[in-house]
Amino acid sequence: MTRQVMDDQQINSLDDVLNTTPGVTSYANDNAGRTTYRARGFNITNYKIDGMQIDATTSFGGVGSSMNMDLYENVQIVRGANGLLGGTGDPSATIYLQRKAPTKEFAANGLLRLGNWNEHRVMADINTPLNHSGTIRSRYVFTWDDTDTFRVREHVNRLGALANFAADLSARDTLNFGFQYERTRNDGASWGTNVPIWYADGTRTHLSRSTNPATDWSQATRDQYTAFINYDHDFSAGWHLKVGYMRTQGSSYNNLGVAKINNAARNVGGYAGFWNQDGTGAYLNALHAEYADARDNADVHISGPMHFLGHEHQIVFGFNGYNDELTQYTFSKALGNCSIAGVTPYSGCQYRAAGLPIANWQTWDGSYPNFTTHRTKAREVDVTRNYGAYTSGRFILAKGLSLILGGRVSTYEAYSGTYNVQNQYSGATGTGRQNAVLTPYAGMVYDFTKTMSIYGSYTNIYTPQSNLRDANNQPLNPVMGKSYETGLKGSFFKQRLNASLAFYLNRQSNVAEATGATRAFSSQSGSYPAAVKKFA
Image (tube, rainbow, N blue to C red):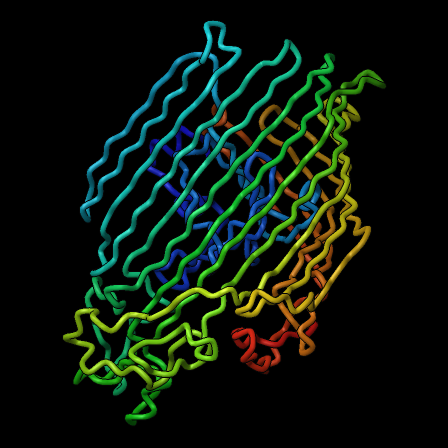
């Protein structure tokens, strides 16, 4: 997905990119920025920016919905298992994003857009050298988008900023560093699927497209700060040493209230899960949750060509990894920092069932008492580490015939710890560690014409699932497996038309299966009940 395509099609967010990508499907849990993307029947979990792996999920604690495409030069989507560089691979796809980088020539680009639903969008992109020769250069990008939507009480505000600098320290050394900020706020955000198709008596509702059963204070906000630095040394003859580091800090604020169609309807008779035509049957469901995430990424690799048997081959040796800390702040009745109009929450800081009835959903304007919350030092911290060494090579066996071999040896570790309101640490629980996990990759490509290739590949599947726990609150071991693929690819009319045909087989083990049980609620930590999992 090139910059030109994103400009031509007004693609402004990562959601827009993936919604226009062939072979990628999606389903939205609600209009709070929680959209799950899938490829080849599996959720996409691998995302990278300039080669650094990030957590771009769109869960309550994820920051994926805040990503703004005005800050990026292009997006590359590789379908299929691809754990060679990141160490983790699932059979869906890997998403690579490349930031806008400074160049030696001055350039400026701007955009002002006015659109339907009261949309206002401004973008400025300025590239300027900082000395006459351009050996020191910079690029600044600012973007702001503010719009209503076709739903009542829904409003979306996006903000992005990038300052990217590069300096040629010598003829062979280049230093690049910069800062980036992205934020998305969804007002009128919902929680789950809420607009019913039928009434409780079985007749169709035919509700307006603008229906949005969210409160006037419901909102979801995601933001992310990034600092990055990269160094490139040219050894000559095509060999390069590259060292990179990236620090990201993000937060997620969820204060959601919505008229749900849940089991509370059983208290007034009729079928559960549907509103009544007389305006009864709706109950306020509400959720308050706050997260913070910090991730350190590092990558060191050396790459270059090797000449033997009359051909030039490409070799890469490297080491990379990340350390991620996800903090979930605790809100609960037990801690006294979660309440709506003095009503006891269903659990944690969630309201369900019949506790908060709505008198008439037909005339309801979204007004309802807001949450009363305050953050304490009580929290749960989930730590994930993934690091390892990797190597890969592309070998030319004959004219048009290439062999690709590689592998990564990874160490993976995950554990959780809780803090009480006095900021006292309870110690690590649910520690899981995997050492020397080998993720091999092998592939072959044959260009049998100038425009078409046939290929085949094999790789291991290695997908951590530390967020899933068993009955003893231990994280499940990673999903393991194998992926086989073969197919045809073609590029025609000077790459204006591209085509592919793929056949693939994926096998997995250690896949989680819900047991239907829940972990006991902890009054000390205020932790939410979580589904117990087991190995399938």
